[in-house]
Length: 381
Image 1: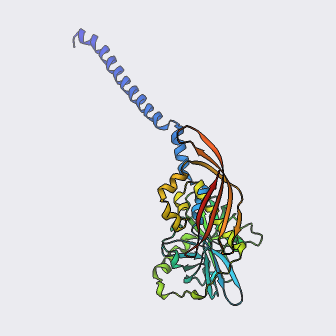
Image 2: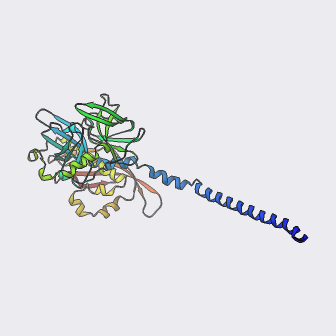
Image 3: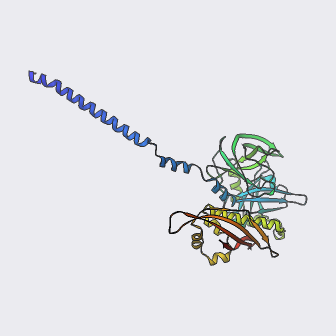
C-alpha cells in the first residue's frame, strides 16, 4: 500500500462512519415522528370514541318501553301481576314462571293500554322462566336478548317493569354481585345477578338491560322485602330454553284461554291515564327526534291526510321541547282530550339561531281497532 492510500484510508473510514450514523439517526427520528403522529391526543377523535361507548340513556329507555308489557295471571281465587318483554317477531314474551303459575287466564297489557289474551308457550318447573305468546304483537318492536354475554360486577344496568301496577317504571343501578344461588317458592336460582336497581312486586319478569348496549342481559325475578337488593336471571342461562320453546310452538296448538270472554272494564281515570301515556310518548318521541315512533301513534285518518315526510317536516325544526303536566277530559263516548303547554325552541328557517315558542297542544285520543290512537292534533301559539 502506497503512502497516498494510507493517507486516504482514514478520511474514507470516517466519512463512511458518519454516513452510517446519519442514516441511523434519520431512521430513529423518522420512527419517532411516526409514533408521535399516531399517539397525538386529538380531541375530535377522543370525542367520537367516547360518544360511541354508550348509548343515550333516554333513547334506551324510550325504545325499551315499546317492548315491555304488564302481565296478569288470573284464576278464581286471585290475580298475579308481573312484567314481561317481547324478544322475537312471533309475539313471544319472556316473563317469570311464578307470574303465570296456576293462572286460568293470562292477559297482556301493552304500553299503549291495549289488552290481549296470551297463551303459554313454555314454562319452567324449577327455573323461574316462562314464555307466553300474543299473535297480535308479532313483528312488533322487540328487545335483543343476549345469548353469550355475561355481566360483571360494576356494570351499569336498567330495570323496567310494573311495580305495584305502575307500568313501565324505570330503575337504575349496577351489577352488585354475580353467581348468587338460592331457592324461592320451589324455584332454583343459579348464577343469578345481584343488582342494586330496586325490584319490588310487579317487577318480576321485566328486562334487565345493559346500560352500554341497550340489550337484555337478564330477567328480573325477585327482591328483598325492602326493595334494596334485587336478583335477575342471566339471559345466557335461559337463552337456549326460551328459543327452543318459541321455535317448537305453533299458534294452532296453543290454548288462548278465555279469548272470547276478555272484556275491557276501564274506568274514566284509567282511560285518562292510558291516553296520557300515549300523549307523553308522542311528545317524548318528538323530543328525541323519533319521528317514526310519533307518526305511528296517529290514527289512520290523520296518516291518510298527512304523509310521513310532511309530518316530519312539521317537527324537524324543533331543537328542544319541554311540556307541562297534562290536563285530561274524558267524554261520555270515552274520547279523551289532552291539553299540554309546550315550550319549543325552534330553529329559524332563513336565519341563524333559534326562537322560543309557547304552544298549547290539544290531542284528541280515541280507540281505533281497539288501540288508543291520536285522532286529532290542534295547536294555539
